[in-house]
Length: 240
Image (cartoon, rainbow, N blue to C red; front, side):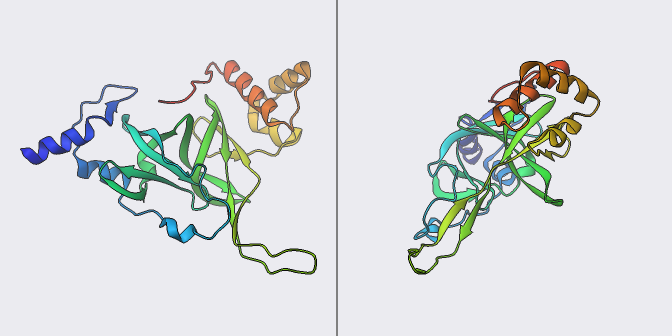
């Protein structure tokens, strides 16, 4: 009984229902089974490397929403872009851990950002990873970040030596319709319009009438929002 009460107290600040009523009592072991117990990459592995692999070095309080609509609140989270892993801290354990079962969760709210874990294609190769929701609705505009590791370089002529470093790569954007596999966006007219299928004529008219550009991220946000209005499903905002 004492063990049960301790487990329940451990979870009370974190657990609530979301979307629909869920009357479930979850003990600590079940919680960790959902999250996974894999330790994150040790921080000292990154020492001596210029730059950072993280979206934010500091853990930020966030929330996790499971596939069966349970929300865990006030979980310290941070996103490792380089390893494409979401890390978390347990209340009584300072060692960062990776969420090794991301498919168990529908949304990952990190501060004011919302992520999903999804299958996608990059250069025609199937992959899986975290993407940030920029605009939500029937069509989601998603952002995929990427950071690469560069080896140290010696001095060459007038070019000074460079240390080992993390290098931010160009962001990639995807459109995801009806929760299907996201499709990569090419920022040009013929790279965007066909993605909207039967509604591409309406989208083209909207772009022409408003003077929007197919090459602008901000204009693409407006295009996606307009599509969602036509589809009757406007943006829902941060899912917390």
